[in-house]
Image (cartoon, rainbow, N blue to C red; front, top):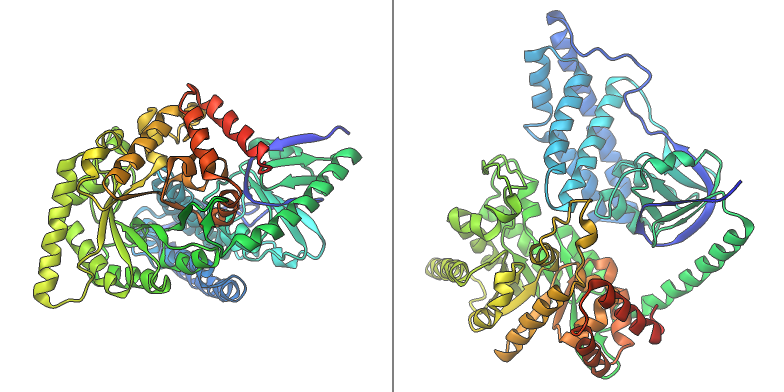
Length: 581
């Protein structure tokens, strides 16, 4: 039988070879479920739903305790978020409403509400939020399981070495995986920012997700190879391939062991150029793991996650506690807190945001905050109060004009005056900067640099706005690349503008965490690099093995290139010469 190669997305590094185990999680199958009920059955149906909710809550309690013990508080928080759905006044109560008003069966009511919630998340621009749809469906499956009196396959009960193959793995499935026996897993759906992907990285279990319908080519018991770095899955490999990948696995494990030595080392090039390496986080629970991965600060704290998990606007006190928790955890290391970056693509029921034809170019981020200034005032008060506990910096998102910057800065100064009059402690000298995500801001960087304390380049949005590519559109995603020559020129322009004014520039987009781009960014003189915590060691390793003078020369050569492909090839050639690829 010839070997078959299936490609997906590698979300957790590592090569594993083993027998495929096809996993069928609990779903509403095998039992006929009515869509509607009679008037007399309404109270009984509501009671069934309430019992299912209680059982689900207790079950999650047990999983949370196990996860907290095995993986830590931050990973347990993923399952706590699922519990929060069960307590959400627009979740289970809405199901009960459908039972009473439309005479839906409990199962149909659960599916209806779950899919409404999932659709909201899947319609968002941010990949992280889109992946939350899987968490909602996980809760829904659990409720249906208990409604039908079923028990799912206990993944913790697997007692032989296997590679798990599934349509999808819910976070609550993933935390049950026993590393001794589950060597890795492959799923039909999923992305890099799914909670399942995050948990697989925490567990150290290699994983390939999003392989699509080709997963049907894997049969139970097939011998397979998965590569969690490249996203490849090889079904029924021949002896030559098995030998090749086994040798590659051994080399990879040795490289990972060497990588550990860079965790807490500063990022310094071979000729002494020092840069700061920070982490991007979205919740207070991610601060400690960032430190454990070697972060020298938080380069981007996405505060919108706090707003997304609420059914009403989070109060100043609630925001203050969350920001204070991160600042205190970082023990004096810098924390850049970005003000609310939300808009027409992210629905918040308590904001009643308008539907837009083009939400990514619409009423969002700083535009929303300036229009609804009470949101910004409350958030700035909370951030400033947290600044009394560490080194806080404030950053405004999606600034596209000097008018917006000046208006936001004026509101900040008013808030400072208020706090002073109230006798509230805060750092009056807190640095204030802007995200450079819009080409107009990059073009006017020399003007902005005279007024701001720092820049932080958000390459994810800068790329899509510069080359007019919706990064979520699969048909044109091939055009989306942070190594596009125009993007590189804008990055260069911003860094040089800040340096002329004695200011600094950071980067908190995906480009900062790309090891291939590291020599380019060193040559451009980027001061601060912020990335997902898992990329820190590799980027530090690359920086330590290059010479800045050579990187400056490399930049000069790259600026003469005209296509993204040429830039990528040049960087690959450079790293191969240095033994980095």
